[in-house]
Length: 406
Image (cartoon, rainbow, N blue to C red; front, side, top):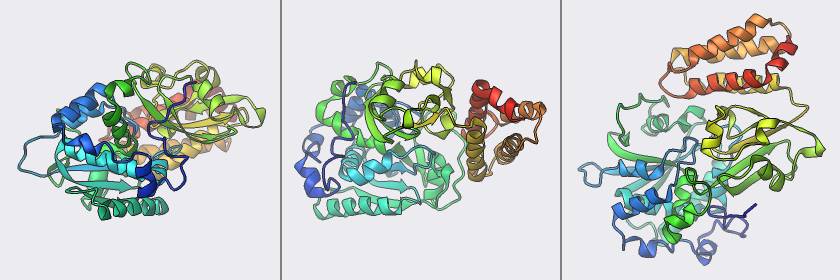
């Protein structure tokens, strides 16, 4: 497997979070040539690189940047999504603690490209200790005069999972309840207090300095044609060496688990893998043995690569218990704005609990799928459809365990 370090290149360096060490390893060098390029030229480079959003959606970053107006009477803003509340995902906190200046460098390039003078980093409420590290780096950048005309503000959330959804994040940032907004009928920027705003994930922005330094072709040299570049995969569960390891898109899932994770813990057999965070569905061991880690390969299986938060489960894992654990989380975290989601998450949680407690019947399994269908496609955001897809993926692959639990 080809080793690669685009975002993780300074992770192993001692005190890499400090400005002096970061600069000794090349931090902020791209800023020297930044103003030799027009903002639109930078956006074109990002488009050519094929950089995709690494917060779960995988949308082309350059196309998103191009929606921002270059000439506007209103100020433009950049918002960095560091909410990272998806179970199984813990990669962005590696960046903000191991190489926060890489993120700040990416923010400065992005702000120049979309003509923004203020950037907000919306950080997960539980990340207090990681926020301190990032704030320290921002303070160092201010003192050193690196930030220039751009202000960077850290905004700490209150621990709501739904605020990882970009429109709910902006509602929260405006001081309102974190409720998702209705999607526009045509492509347009996000809006922060009525001003055009670009929202990107931490790793997406942290990938920008490499592209600016080495060019779009250098980034495309990794990954696949449709999923170029790399991703920080967060691997947890029943593996010998859980952790965060960067790899290029398109590598074999089992090669990744064996190479970086050291294989299955205690020599047990693989049973199932959640490929990219709790909301991406579940696959069997046989499927994991024949899949590549890229957006298209997972989508062809009815799953999603998501954030790359890989949860590995061994032969002793009860899949009914796993689904119950996930549904308890979704029931707790539904914002309650839409009835199918507010009520549906409660119903599916209770139904799986009934099956797990051996009080259920085959009708409850059918009812579970019926409620999942009711939740799908009838809400403002993708929370309920994601829960529905998770239920379907578990029952389509492990229905025998649910029936045995009856």
